[in-house]
Length: 216
Image (cartoon, rainbow, N blue to C red; front, side, top):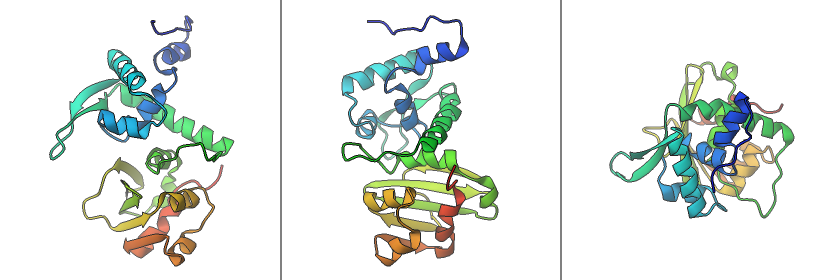
């Protein structure tokens, strides 16, 4: 069965013809943080079967939005990455994050949650004005996920994986991370309860939460 089309002479409709199918933009979301192996994408997209994931990747490749690549050593594994054209979807995803945040987050037991999804949210909610003078590399370890936020000259760079000589390392469990990022628990209380462990530049780490939009 071919891909359905809105059959409208409209730029928005034509864009949705390419990326409007279920799961497609979430595949793009995962690749915005860097190249990913097929298995990594499967793990990050619970509920999406391997056949459907394969079909979506092939369609995105056909549209020139993703390409096959190779991870650098020591992994050296086959992976998928966004093309330069595919990266043009980043503002779309960031806009969706901000729009979704304005709707409020519904947390249900049946919902999946991954700390790594907050990497993209951080880009969307970053406040450059509050980041002046906050040059720091943060490494965040949440359960078995590791990702980094680097703030430099008022700009934010993010990636999945460890950092080289991070200024501050924060380690916690997924439940506490959710409480921290959704305003249900304070940074200080998590430190006091030993649910959040901190090494490195303590002052810089305490400033981390102030670098992102707190409310709409």
